[in-house]
Image (cartoon, rainbow, N blue to C red; front, side, top):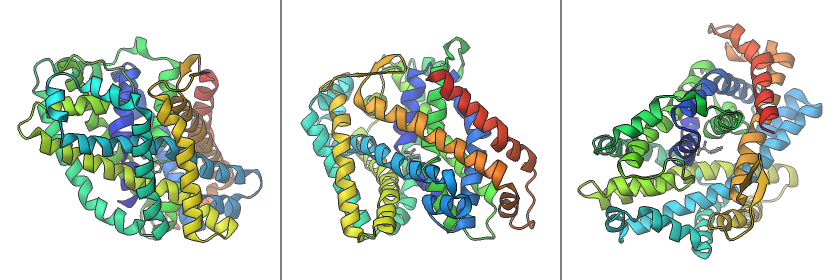
Length: 431
Ligand code: PHE
C-alpha cells in the first residue's frame, strides 16, 4: 500500500489526462494500458525482487548484485529523481495556490467561464509561480530533513481514499453535464489515425513516471518487503491501483472539457482549468474544490518526499553528510533548477527545439527525464534481471519455490527480449 501511495500522485490526476488530451484521447489510453500490462508490470516485478534480494537502495542494489557497468543504472536512478522533482515542485505549488483560490473567487470566476483566463494569468506571473514552488519545496525539505516522512505517509494513506471519493463526486457531476458524452467518445473511442511514434513515446514515459519505475523507488520499496510477500500479486495490485486512479481522473475531466467547450489538447493546465469549472456546477462547490486541492497537494507531497529522499539518502551514504545538511543542500539545488521550469510556462524564457517541436524548458525536462531517462533505466533493469540474474530472480519471485508464478516464462522473455526491444524501438523512432 505504501508503494501504491508513492505511485499515485500528480502523475495520475494532472499528467495522465493532459497527455491523453494532447495525444488524441482514446488511442493514447489504449496504448498506455497495454504498456502498463506488458512492460510496466514485468519491470515492477523485477525492481521489487532486486530490492528484496539486496535489502538496499537502488545504487547499492546495482553495486551488490550486478557491479561493473550496471552501476550506471544506479547512478541514473539517483540523477533522474533530481530533475523530476524540479518540475514536480512547480506543479505541486499550483495546488497550494488553487487551495487558497478556492476560498476566494475561484468558483464564481469558473462559473463565469473564466477558469482558463485565471490559470493563464497565474502562470503568466512567474514570481507568484516561483513563490508557491519554493513554498512547496520548503515543506518537503523540512519533512525530509526531520526524517518524519514515515508519519506523513502513514497519515496520507487515510486521506487518499477521501481523494477518490471527491474524484467520484466530480465524475458523477461531469458525466451528467449536458454535452459531456462527447468527452466520453474522445476518451474511449480510439481513433488510430492519431497514433504516432510520439504518442507511444509519451505513453511509455508516462507509464514509468506514474508507476514510479526507473527511479529506484520500487527497488527501495522491495527492500522493505518481507520474504513471505507474494511479489507478482503485490506488483499487480500497485499497477492496478495506480492505473485505475489515472483512468478515473480521465472520466472526471474529459466530459467536463467537452461540456464546457474547453480544449482537450491545451496541455499542463487541463486539470487546473477543468476541475474548478466542474466544481462550480455543484452546490457547495467551494467546499469540494478546496478539499480536492488540499488532497491533490497531499498526493503531490508524499511523492515529492520520496523523490527527495532518494537523492538525500544517496548523499548521506556516499558523502557521509548529516541528514539536515544533505537535505537542505539537495533540496535547494532542486528548487533552483526548477525555477526555469516555473518561468517557462508563461513564456518568460526562450523555447528549445526537441523531437521536432519548440518546447518550453519544463516540457524539455519532463520529456527527457520521463521519456528517455526512465525507460533507459527500465532497459537496464529488464536486461539485467532477465539475462544475468534469472536464477536468483526465480528464487526471489517464487519465495524460494514456495509460491507458484504461472507467468514465469512470459516474464522472463519480456525482460530478455520484448521490453528492451520495444523500449529501444520507441526511443529510436522518437529520437
Ligand atoms: N508516480 C508519481 C506520480 O504519478 C511520481 C513519483 C515518481 C513519485 C517517483 C515518487 C517517485 O505522481
